[in-house]
Length: 259
Picture 1 (spheres, one colour):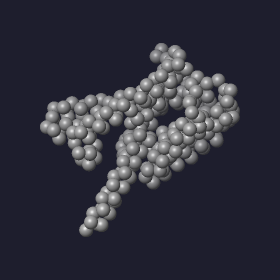
Picture 2: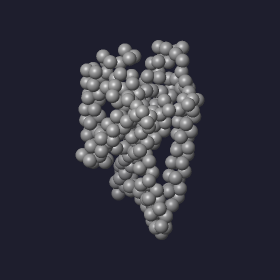
Picture 3: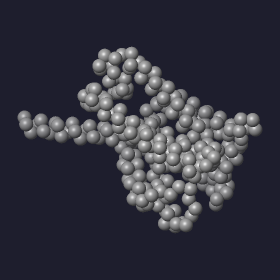
Picture 4: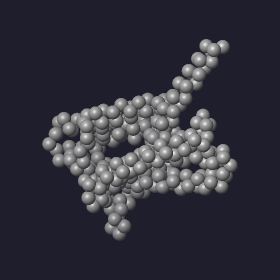
């Protein structure tokens, strides 16, 4: 019986670790709102100075707040009961503060809405910048004469988001968003290593410290989280990657201004 208990405990512990890794890979999209700051670089007065400050400050503040909230929740509720969709609201319900739980739930809905808007804002600017470089059709980089925003990119982003939100389950979209972002972070980290080696004297607005250690760690951790995602997510990722490569091969390569 003791042996069975030890084996059950070992299995339960490893299962919890595996579940934590999977959940970390799935919800990573909730942590990269800071990435939207970089997509607004062309609208910043002094991007070389202000963008690094904004990104690193957002990362530092969010990390501290996430850790603090997690520690508080573990102090209120046993950790094995927090595997729910609304852990903060659940913790307040657990101690009988239903009014606070309702208020937090409302705040969560408002927070998710702002995150979605920021991500859609970032996507419109990405379409604009990529189109401006010639990798996508030029109409996506047109600016509205009155509002000074990339209106075609905004419409295309809105239509795509509405279409996918209406046709696919939310959890699958979250996983696809996460794997795409993790792959992008890995690619950028690899690019930092390559450019630092091939173009050491290139003028840089911000210089990543401790290269190649930090980029290598970023690649390892991002790829590890990618491996925790489901086969469906990997299939969708490969399909989208192939579509992107086809667009690049048939249009972007011939029209790129940097080519």
